[in-house]
Image (cartoon, rainbow, N blue to C red; front, side, top):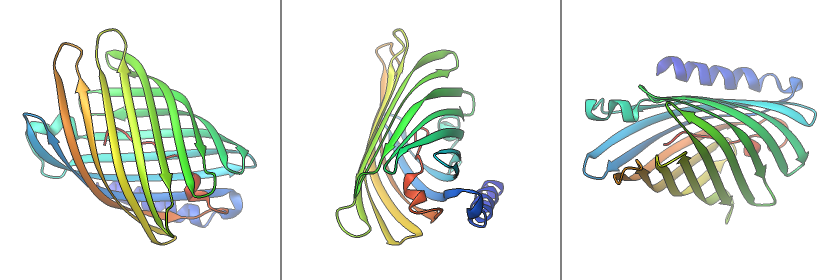
Length: 241
């Protein structure tokens, strides 16, 4: 965990000094999530994330790293809570407020690996932020499709409610995973964002059995700006939490 923090902070600091090379922004996030699983109990997760982006004219690349671990080290949830994700985005700025990209991700859930390849878009008209993606994924041994959408609106200076929807549909009769999250973020200064959210999810195993989860999360995100409003135009891809 300490190595992850050092890597993310190092990326952001190094990138801050590289604006002449096309630095387009970086973020570092830390948040904790309380998860309650139907019929199984609850546990607490600690999440760290880092992203950095560089632009070369209208083209650019963004790389992200996510780490989620069980803060209570509860063996009952070890394989559920332990998660490491890496994502890469190759983007094109079609307009000043529209970024299009192809992306690839690799996620390790302890005893399960998942890989995704897809397309995404980020539209930032005025005080709104709309982000969506669709991807084909392989979660050993299953294949399926991922659909992800997020909307955010600044209703007062620095204050923005947001909504996020995600659905993983497995091929055949192997079920689905769906998640809905409502949140509120506040930026007292340009470089700091504080956010909290409530969420619910359903994990349908396709055999008549499903699990329901509810979550409550609070955290912060540090923004290291690049050219213009770079950090507001970074993709925010995450795993299940």
